[in-house]
Image 1: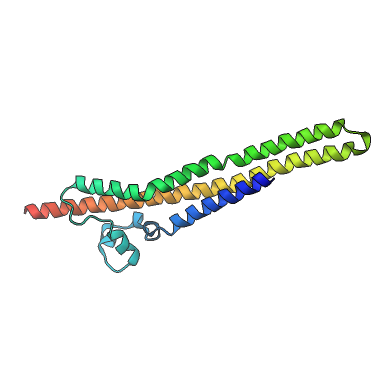
Image 2: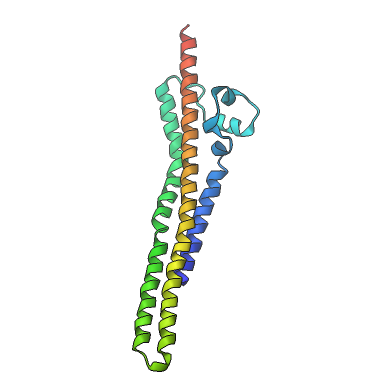
Length: 183
């Protein structure tokens, strides 16, 4: 049970820290992925102003905008993606540790069956109890962790959509600027 407890603390600390980091990200809080071009151009909202700092206003071509937003993605996403992959590997360990507890519980049960008459029933009951508790604990740890991981992936996707939205806005702005410069 101690390995399950340590695994639980580690999984939930990592997952909740990542979830709240994403939840408080300025692109997600500002709902950039849902904003229109007109809303993105309006000054005043602090989250929109911070997102506006990512826009490359003096870009000479759409290729330059594309390179810029590639760098923006590289500054925000790799650390998040690594943590998500780490959690995706770590979370399934819970049921496996529960299964290991089941095996040791069943071994205790079989040892209890081979013991003397007076202690036989107690040893069998204790072994079965150990097997069921560890299996249940492994599942109780894993099922909510998978739900939290799903929410984290959803937040990450919202961040990706926000960056893509700013890139589309910046590309449109650059094309408009280049068209006006030609006239």
